[in-house]
Length: 88
Image (cartoon, rainbow, N blue to C red; front, top):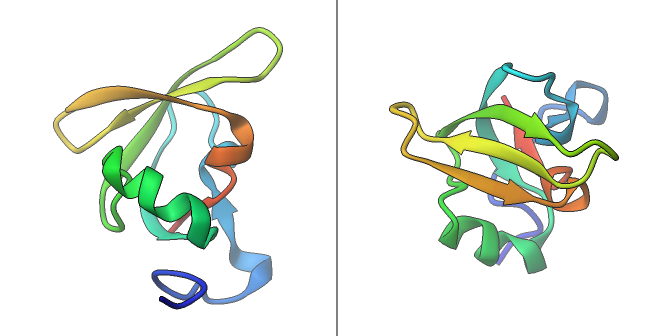
């Protein structure tokens, strides 16, 4: 397995789920951490899937995401986990 499922264009262009603002959406580009990738894939964080930041805990962690174009379900993640999900 490669280091990433897909390659991001350049480090300066990299934006992750943790960078989203409340209500903002993005499309998953790739998963950065190979050890975390399987867990995230099993939770529906598949490249090409749209996610929207739904809420953030008062101290910033955890965050909740709405996963899928049709608001399939809500997923709660640590900010450190969200940082490994890169967006297009």
